[in-house]
Length: 156
Image 1 (tube, rainbow, N blue to C red):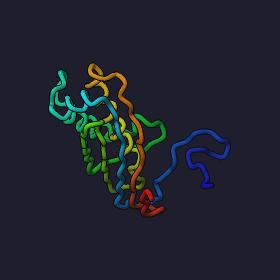
Image 2: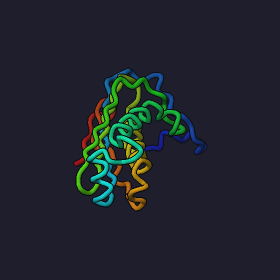
Image 3: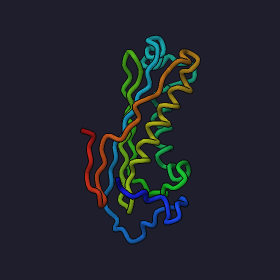
């Protein structure tokens, strides 16, 4: 098992010092899904939710969240994100969200991609909960990352 880098020799939490690492291009892709009733899914697809365009608002929420990851996850470094894209694909049973985040920096953007997906999914729930309070958010996961010392990784 790899060493836990966010703990010092005494076991106390710490922010990892990345100052000696070179800046390299970094990219991460994450996905997640919200499942819901056919009525809620249809309302979202047809822009029939009283609060407004659920998919447009969720896309912006995801992008904003990626930019604020360093404020949300205590030991994450704030990063100069160069791109954050959030794709939402509605279907008869819910919405699948994919976030792709890039930067050129000393540390990766995996957390930024997963935060973007999570907040987009929570925004969908918030906007459509009047139609279906039993919606379920799940399967938030990293699909791929590239760059850095550990190189490229893709879910198998």
